Image (cartoon, rainbow, N blue to C red; front, top):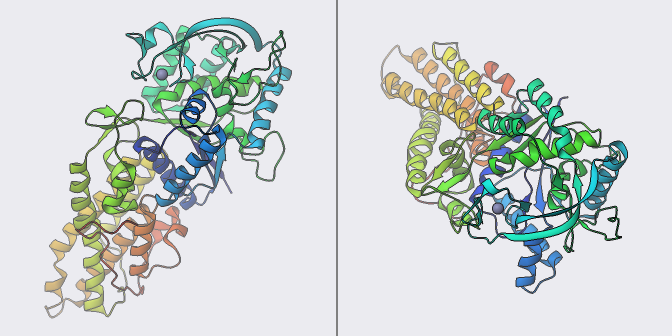
Amino acid sequence: MAEYYLTTAIDYANGDPHLGHAFEKIGADVIARYHRMLGERVWFLIGMDEHGQKVAQTAADRGLAPQVLVDEVAEIFQAMWRRLGISNDQFIRTTAPAHKQGVQALIERIFEKSPGDFYEKSYEGYYCVGCESFKQDNEIIDGRCVLHPTRVLEWVEERNWFFRLSRYRDFLRAHFEAHPDFLQPASRRNEILSLLEQGLDDVSASRARLAWGVPFPRPTSDGEVQTTYVWFDALPNYLTATGFPGVEPRQHWPAQLHVIGKDITRFHSVIWPAMLKAAELELPERIWAHGFVNLGGERFSKSAGVKLELSEAIDKFGPDAFRYFLLREIPFDTDGNFSWERFEERYTSDLANGYGNLASRAIAMIEKYREGVVPRLERNDSYAEDLRDIADYVDAMNDHLLHRGLEAVFHNVDNANEYVTMQAPWKLAREAGSAAALDETLATLARKLAIETVLLAPFMPAKAQAVWEQLGGPGAVADQRIAALERLDPSGWRVTKGAPLFPREAPAAA
Ligand SMILES: [Zn+2]
């Protein structure tokens, strides 16, 4: 069985989960659920990045030991992901002993396999604590980091371990050339290609004077034990999660997909592959960099002071509607905007009046006219259209264009609602000689609804399961296979009306 190991960025343990975190986790969760429904053996990793200066500062400001802070934050994040139905198989925390040992083992392996790739150097420059990296002149505006305008840059002078990233430019260019899908979407790939064109600077691999982190396994020549630079600690989580350096029964490496935000593509598609190459380990197959969720044109983030209470947005219509809205409204390959107005519009038009209304009408009519049993289905004209919608969905989902996947499903939903109006089953039911036409209409609706429900299951797992049960479909909707959809035949299924799926009034918090 094909293995599909996917990861998200690990979240920095320095505040509450926000909309940007949720967008990424929900998107990756949809990809994970979709691949399970392709019949693949999926391993889905998420987690927390718990070291670094920002965490140490926040803990100090609150009078807490850093470990106490990160334990608290990890619990808050995990509770949020449970509430949003995130189906991760593993939750890694970089303060776990196994991870710390794995990071040190990876660094030692680079020392062994690529002697000279780590070297000592004195360095000075402006350091952004927000990015946890030194900034070049073109990344600084008015003395501030362009990504963290509320933070003051620090002038840092120290002697560190450096990683010879510059040596990997030609390797990386060749890898990008040979693997056009390595970093997507194309806009992100082009950015990194032009970065590679300009050449690469070596990067710091350790920090002096920072206690909250993984000790760098080899002291500097003056005997100082430094702390592993936070990116050299964070990026290997994808590898240490698989049991590295030990050989565990669950040895997933390499990852099939890293889902990350567009602000950290350089770390994931340049530094991380170079580290792996230096250690003579396989590279991840693909990296997908999604865009940002904006509110009134501004990026959501704690540091920029733009905030929306995540729990308030979930309370509004429940977790599934929230998942649906984010991934329908905000393209997964670029930036998008969150607005309450659009959320309400989409909830009403797409979910309540679109899919929800189709489900309740179809099920009510099958109960009323056919005693709750879906009639036998003969192929009819709408079947080719369903197959096209399924194919469009699969193409979009394989390309991680989740918004397009939903477009394909709702193309089918809209057509099904038009079909009801056109066929007018309530008229057929009153006409003599229309029994066969009514059978065909009801069976067609049941089949469309079943197909849509399977395709929506990765996006709205709880709602899709509820509709599947009302339809009388076999087993759990999540256990259905996308490849089996073209043979799907709901004849004989026994339907039962349930509670309204998408009530016009906000439901109680789920
Ligand atoms: Zn910054």
